[in-house]
Length: 308
Ligand SMILES: Nc1ncnc2c1ncn2[C@@H]1O[C@H](COP(=O)(O)OP(=O)(O)OP(=O)(O)O)[C@@H](O)[C@H]1O
Ligand SMILES: [Mg+2]
Image 1 (cartoon, rainbow, N blue to C red):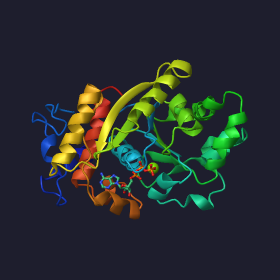
Image 2 (cartoon, rainbow, N blue to C red; image 1 turned 90 degrees about the vertical axis):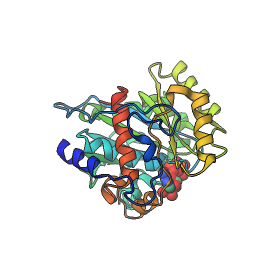
Image 3 (cartoon, rainbow, N blue to C red; image 1 turned 120 degrees about the horizontal axis):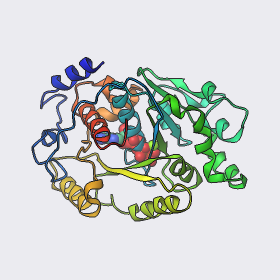
Image 4 (tube, helix red, strand yellow; image 1 turned 120 degrees about the vertical axis):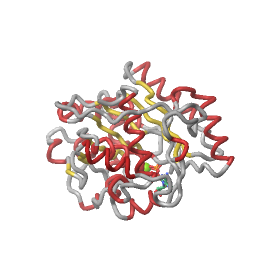
């Protein structure tokens, strides 16, 4: 496994895939796109045993910032490094499921059934993906009903945490793809999670609404989940050719300091292309800068101690 990674990583040339968004500046030792020197993020050691999983919610109530794209590709990169990964689709739109080649609308059982019916066995709902070591808990539009139905449940914020308990020992990382809202489903994700990753699109209004998100995370930490950590802020859709992108990242670093990942994700059409092909970029365009960026993010996450 690690040989394959090494090879894939070394094979990446500075002009692989045309646009080099965010790549040139991400060499160890140089000043990175966040304006700080890039540390070296070593290739992670192979694991000899698996679990218990660290659960990470990918969260931002702003739409279209790269939550789903980051869930798929960070998950695939972690799986390439030998981690056992579960991706949880927690958005009734089912974009994560679709992005992995599953038509969620024909599924009999999804995460909705797990939340609402105690008799459903989680192993019957989990599906393997094309990526070795990476599984999926799919969702579809049924999940939109859960938001309403959960309101009358006892300990309604803890339903997802309880649902995941039987399988956390089988995985190293569980990534939850949240929907763009701060409603009860997202609160359930934050209550089940050990950490949160906040993807931010590099555009002018990126920080609008982040205060409310941080407030929600603080409230969940205070009242429901004292161990909840902010694992990092991830700048996505970064275009190094525009002053604008660089300014947005500089403001994000000003506001959040060391919480901002050194790794940024460049803007490239390869991501929507990979979604159409229903594959992670790490297999769709294995040596593209976008694949490299998510591998680097996986390494950074592991180097920070936020994943095994
Ligand atoms: N780095 C990128 N470069 C270019 N396009 C991207 C990038 N990341 C994501 N996209 C595209 O932007 C769109 C939104 O991305 P994505 O679905 O990941 O966001 P999201 O935050 O999950 O959205 P939603 O809030 O609707 O769930 C998609 O079409 C995706 O292919
Ligand atoms: Mg999404």
